[in-house]
Image (cartoon, rainbow, N blue to C red):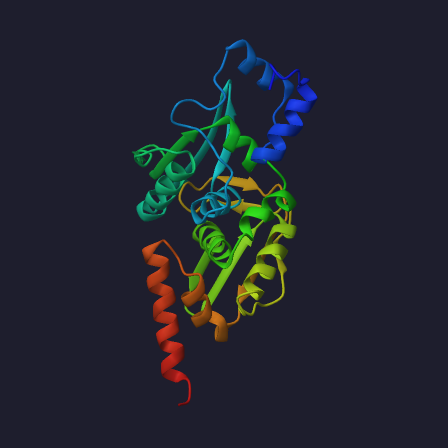
Length: 256
């Protein structure tokens, strides 16, 4: 692009148009001078809609972290369920063009499974606002379904016949409800679970802290649990087992 005489602003616009990522002028400058490589030999990112990318987006908007460490742009997941980490590892590898999945490592200090990958292009893509990401999430029913599964893997909780999702971003939950509705999955009204400033105690450590933001939630109607299980489901086995048990109980009590 530089050989074509494009200015930094024009290059920014062209990269955004072709990849969906917003790059700073400093990043482009580093690439042109050879200080840093745009993506690295194993971290090339092509923003083509696919189920794996939808899963990565769903993780990033729920349990995942998108961080900056000096010149590294890191996408990380730290969770207690190995199957969740494995699925994210495989999807992240597919999105970044790797032949093998990313390493899933156990952290004794955190008591969690951790997956980490680095890519400037994917970092900038995932840092986009939700209205921009919708194009990839809503590409097809499969992409929508996988996005919802990833989001529920991260933020969903099931106890008995109660399947609830939590998040501090109200607009995000409103959007998730709309996606569920497109699968004919009925939900209960969105409500506030805890207000900002609420004092909370970690049951594992006993440490006390105060919630910074309001936390919202909504549940899926019991009569839609079977549809959710068939159309969305969980990657996490323990959650899927509870969901399957709930669906079985609902079927057994339903009149013939």
